[in-house]
Image (tube, rainbow, N blue to C red; front, side, top):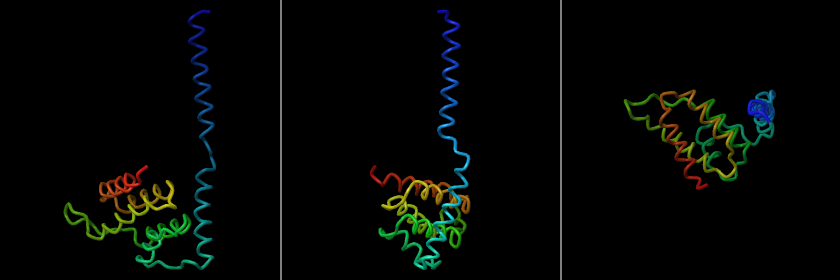
Length: 151
């Protein structure tokens, strides 16, 4: 067999493999499904009248409670971001003392038995959007929380 034909065959197979891998992971409705599922979870929790609270301490208690399931965590984190997500500006190079509460929330969320990667990543992204000046501190808290899981 000619070497040129072998090379062309291998390149063709690699291209075909790349296309198949792309089709395996590509899902055009993924973002719509995720957005709709989030809305449904929040509506389910609101309709059940279990939680109607936006008090910061109550929401933190929900995150810290080991009995909170993923839906309650999602609701509590959403309410924290919506009503209490903006942290006061830094005091020079030091973070505002209130930021320690958010570090604790991130750490607790990472170690929570009913958390999942989507909750952690979404909370991290939204908190970074609301507080871009705390990027380093948020990333450090996230790293500490994930490293403490002992996986």
